[in-house]
Image (cartoon, rainbow, N blue to C red; front, side):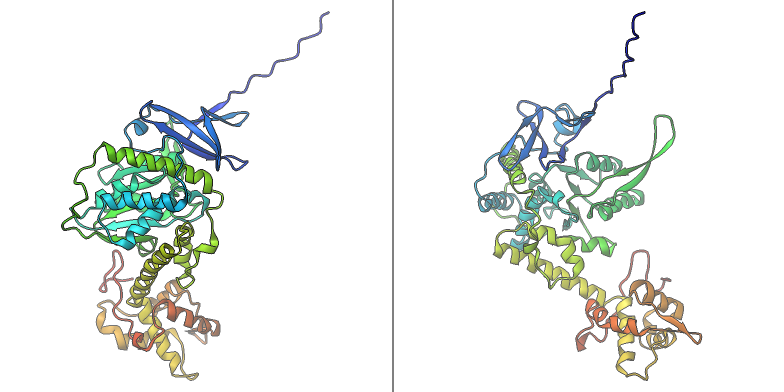
Length: 457
């Protein structure tokens, strides 16, 4: 009797995954490039100057990465922009000079913000080496040059994804998740409340790694299927007004566009030479990424220790890619102004008013009782005429606990600030701009989204 043949195991199918970029376990980079002349996509794989072209990359025995097809609608219509090949640029200073000349030739803005825009472009090509990213925001009315700024600056950013308020918001989640590039968002003041809330989710979750947006979708079997969308990455946004969310405002370095007459050398229309030069610079920036991705996190350059910790955290990655000391000082100076504006805004808030009252009570000496009831009485005497709502210990207590982060404890039926709370007060004074004598009067409270002085907080 012939021996039985061994049972054949079914062959496992290799999963093919379209991708635009990947970092391999050995540290090598994989970057998709697109040649619009030959209408061909492929990968550039490697690091520094040890790179080559690949039609696909085997990630594991069962997974192969392939570039998106050149017939992909997003690729062929320029919704997402790619480099076509790595190109030599010389030294970093020469590359920065060419980027700045390009931006200056097409956009009219302040000199300081021109520096910010130039280095933000550079930053987008290594942003994924960091865990936080800042945003660039331009603000102004119609005809002030916002769209031109987005086109000129955005065309040099890595995997620029162009969108506007006229677009449907839903595809933005898929685009950011698939390409993980730079979102260029025109007219960020979305009118529809649902769309606005979705854009705010992208902006609020997209500045730090590890905070995907969860959305529920319907599967082919008509079942609801929650899915996480990766929205982390650099963003350049144009708006006509301010963001109502203070935290979101603090993530942006902003330029108010001047409007009015343009410099004579700025062309009114963009021709093919603009797009060709932009692609040439993207090619040089791709080589910059291959050479500098590993050393992008230059913490010794982040500096700016006089900035608040939050601003250091948000803008440190941008500052760290600036090699030129004078340019770095200019950007840090601009961020310092942003820091001053944040302190000034806080000094006009209800929190600052409550803190100012606490400071006055502390100044009376050890006999002063730092009870919520006493703080409320002093607040009512000083600021009660400014509010149409009732000033109650519950409202003041919520400001002390939730907004100032203090933890009064109950003693003989009264809530009192603890000694450890008093120790924290000097840091809060500095944060809310109450460190100097002229700041004793914090001013009127800021009006929050959906809240006025006459409404309940």
